[in-house]
Image 1 (cartoon, rainbow over the protein chains, first blue to last red):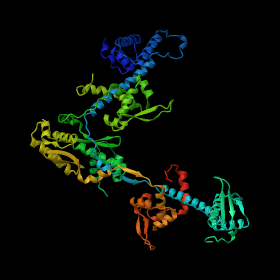
Image 2: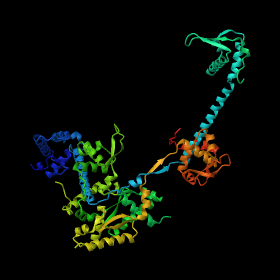
Image 3: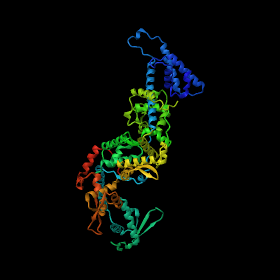
Image 4: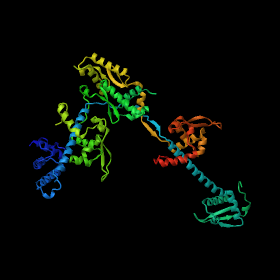
Length: 252
Length: 190
Length: 190
């Protein structure tokens, strides 16, 4: 059989079918389905005998051909179908084959173009590394970007100012160590023994707790009071010296 | 003010070092001139090399210009040296490329339905060769990848731009005529 | 008999693909012509490219010929080939630039007191980028350097002169308008 010369060079089932049709000198618009189906099946059988793995699509087209063939065998001139022309069972396949053939032609044309263009030569790019080592730095700026950045700065500055104002107002209310020491001395005068915790009654801010404690340390240094702590983290007891009111606070 | 003569001369130098097709826009930017002006200069240069019958020519590819050899000197170049020829595309690659070139942007599914066979491998190969590229996503189920041809495709097949591809209807005539007139010049792989 | 025109055109193609200097003898052998004839053709070609003021020229090196670029076009080739690296100014650089633009001439001390933070590095960077420059010395202690914006600064923002800068009071309005019309985000380092 003639088609054997092409063997496995077919690009797909359509390619094979188009080849068989053309080889049999049939019109693509009037395919003799039973003849072509036979040739197609023979080809596929032949391939399988040679242990050539055919893509599944070849079998799908085989099924389609058989289906068309069987439809062609059905009686077609039924009077109840008069209103419309009965569709030729081959028409869908023919349409596909024609489209495929068109692209096969384009492929042929592209091959020609490829051939022609392979006769034209270009030169490679020169070695440009001497230029590419130090790129030009281009500053990307526009007015809106500049103004937006400035606006963000102005807003943020305003915010910082507000925060700063709050911060200093709170600070002004806070007591200095000197004032606290004087306050403590007045409180301790006339007392013998007092718990440190009692000094913190009504003291809310961390700052004031620390201030009280640091002031107490100062009083210890001045020997106005002694402190005792029996256990770690235990209660601190303050023992007040008699001369507490005569001791001078440094720098006060 | 830089003279037209200087700019045209610079364009020649620039194309020469660049080797690859030089984008008109990139060339125009070097001189801060507008695109149309630069394009006209390139066209003038192209015309000059042609009318003087030079052995090097300027070809236009997708709004870029490139120096190349005059096609008819192919024979002498081959006598001088054996230039490295790239491997020709296979029949299936050419078919898939044909479908993509004419139907782009196109999905793999559409290509396969025209060819009646799977073509993942072929598409992969064409992508690797940079002859096609992904150009977006379709709107259908699974948002399938859309393929289109590249600038390299135009270069390899000698098209100025994709619009230069002949009408599908004319193709058969072109192919048949070419086969009749110079079968001896086309080496067909059989 | 191959015409002189064809041989000269072929020599151009051959030089082009050869890249390196093409030996006159090798070129002559392609056409079976004698050395002197080939040499004369190369000289004629060289003369043609020169008299036409082409951007590519032919140079002779030890009885070989080679295409090369016209030396005067070096500057344009450099412009074409030097990659451009886009740099954005940081938020701090933009702030310092804004302060200098609006308060110039201004000392580093004044800028720092406005921003509440040192800015030697930022000023250095702006000087390097040629967006600001030293414009004199102040009268205070140590005669501090006064900074002002440069012509490049005006150019980059498209101002004809420094008076064209928008009023500080209008800035918020401008920003709001811009944000309405242009939603594009700018990357700010804060």
